[in-house]
Length: 375
Image (tube, rainbow, N blue to C red; front, side, top):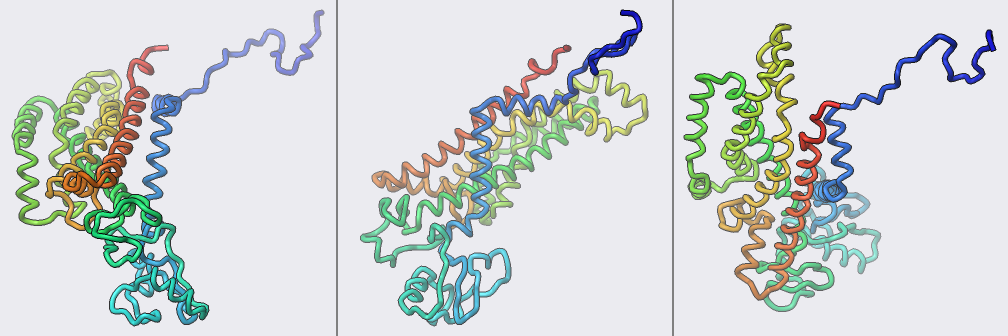
């Protein structure tokens, strides 16, 4: 009827046309993250690996032969935190045993329980350390290595050290080492590839020759020579691998920058007066990160494998650092001790499998065929 108004509150007045509804604007990176979360195998592998690594950062509180808390003569001490803080009882004073050096906290706990004077010791859930030799442990019979048993879930190695404790600490060292290598190599590779691809011409020609010369240096011989002179620490060895592992990535970044700098958005940035650094790292780099992010999980696999290989050959971290390569080497030397073969190789296999699953999911999520089409 003329003059009537719409009774529905959401309907527009007569003669008024609403604009068409729009879908929520979502960035490409967020779309890729959502795609990654839908790939269950990679997503769950990422969560499992992340949880294990975060838990491994608490190893001194979970797997340690030092007590968490000791109550002695009305005072409280925190030996397990001594490596993080300057707290009391890093060295034993008396504690009822009059020992010189670090107290034997498991024996001290038994002693306090027998005395019944109100003193007590709180040990970590797994009360054995990665460096501790258990040759004098009465529960272990015969010469090492000892097979798995109650209290020692994965047995001991050929020096009577707990295998589970060394595997747990070795996991943290391996992941941390590999992440450091990826960070160093990617920082160098991305920077060098960006410079060569962006400037081109003589800069690219001379830079490529220098990169080829650097790539011709034999990496393994260099590591052997350096390791023969000085035993490298974790950071030193990661830096050494990082400065040799960036060459391949620089080629990819060079090609990505050559491709991206010819596009219209780069011309627009030049026209509005942006600096070269701003164009390189604020405009081109975010659009050239696909190979960097896609290859990162597989670079982590390579870093773990490199550390295990160097430790296996004896040119890696300085003993008695908990190392998967050193445990694999023990398994080779004690091939009949099944626990020294099965558990280190099993831990290495499971870790690398999780990282590879993550890498496959990242590669599929960043597939340009999915999000590069005009819609």
